[in-house]
Length: 204
Image 1 (cartoon, one colour):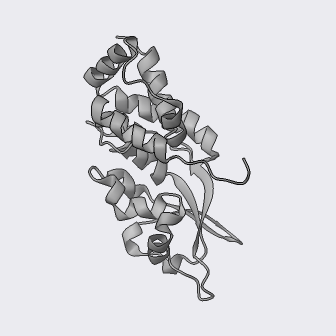
Image 2 (spheres, one colour):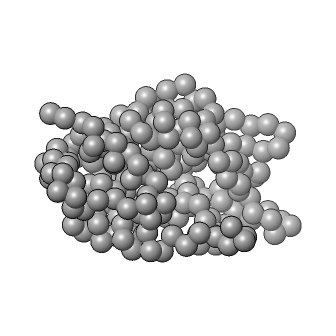
């Protein structure tokens, strides 16, 4: 790989164009017609479940902005684990919401996260992503792969089940080799693997 990061820009641009043709419902950011129920939690979006059950380590709880409505999961000698389920209540414009900026990984939102989670006196950030998630039923710690299979996968299926017309239209297009999902799109947006499975296997 020569130390270079993969460029997802082409796949992302292709994905945006694809969504404009097939429908916004195939995005995890799109509001479901009815709340998605996953264990003890309910969310308007698949993305809300993914972000709202993300485990985040913070070192000083007093520095957290009240707007986060952070819920304490556990504490130990190294700090505290919290999650932000309030994002599950966001129905529209999720990508522009402050909670999304606080939870979305990547350097782009570091400054906003620092304002919301706080900065320690030494100048170090008060937060750290653990790259683990909560099981929605028993609160167990899950890896990303485990969360994808046990939670995100069925959540996406439940979401797409609420849009049968769009699903059938896409299935018909695929039968004619139209509006297919490319490898570049899947590399940029891994939820498309779930879309492929749902649209390709579910029948009336």
